[in-house]
Length: 164
Image 1 (cartoon, rainbow, N blue to C red):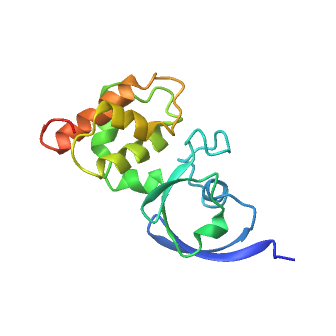
Image 2: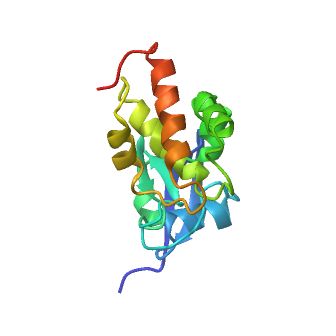
């Protein structure tokens, strides 16, 4: 019979942590309930809506589909840390300027996904932006404003060069 609780060691937002977790605790629940990092939201709990997105070892993952015990030895970054570093400051401004955040529930995950795409460099086409963000549900904006914001930041970061 496997043990119900496990000791894990991971780096969350630059801080090394050692915690004892229930084997069934999802990463997003661990972040929200144990560490009070509430920027990632719990939506569908099936990995479909994307609201629970965080970075694990640099890749955006669904926090509801990953168990906290799977993060033993990893680096986890939440929207709280990423926003503190100014890495996405231009994206945040563009979302505000283009009214791309409305209720804000999906915004943290949208920003993470958009940044993941923009880290590839260049100016992605609007279709590419839509495809990359397709794993994040927004019930308020209709996506047009979000795509506009991501495209504007891509152009700004690339010095205004043309799309792919």
